[in-house]
Amino acid sequence: MYKIVVLYPKLEENFLETYIKEHVPLVKKIPNVKKIVINKAIGSPAGEPQFFVLAELHFETEKDMREALNSNEMREAARHAMKISKGKMQAIFFEEIKVE
Image 1 (cartoon, rainbow, N blue to C red):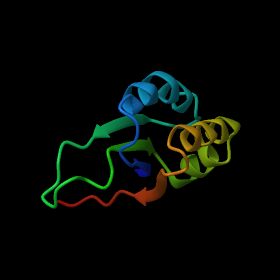
Image 2: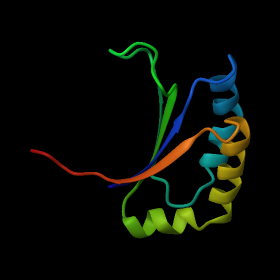
Image 3: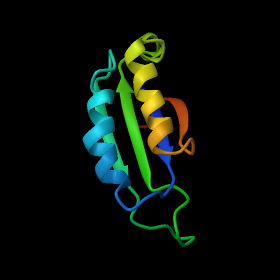
């Protein structure tokens, strides 16, 4: 399993509402996405968390993820993410490691 993880800092009060209403529909159009998970920070042992929202886009293979990254749908979603986060979002690509 491969993932694109996108981290968003705390922004305006209505950021999460805007994210779910406007951004998630764009993400759902990205090809090869098997699962979307949106996580909202509720705290941190160090005090205020650095990031408020963590989004995960799951893919079966690295090839599927790379195809998605090169798609027009991804470009549109990325432009929108930059707009609503004022360029403060961070994306990281992961390969899941199974531990038994």
